[in-house]
Length: 75
Image 1: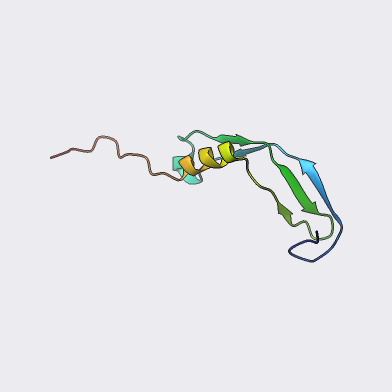
Image 2: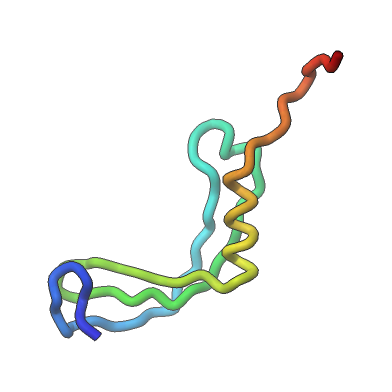
């Protein structure tokens, strides 16, 4: 398989460990998701890609949900 960016054949896969989190100040109050994908890296241009496992993808989707507003009055 060639690189999707520069079409080089010089690629390799590496085990990775990453901590996925929501961005911004709000992200500091939210839980993080640990993922352990294999990352394919082009050794020519540095383009990298990976795929999350189903459970990691599910947890990552939870990071995008809006948190309920605190101290809001209901009618």
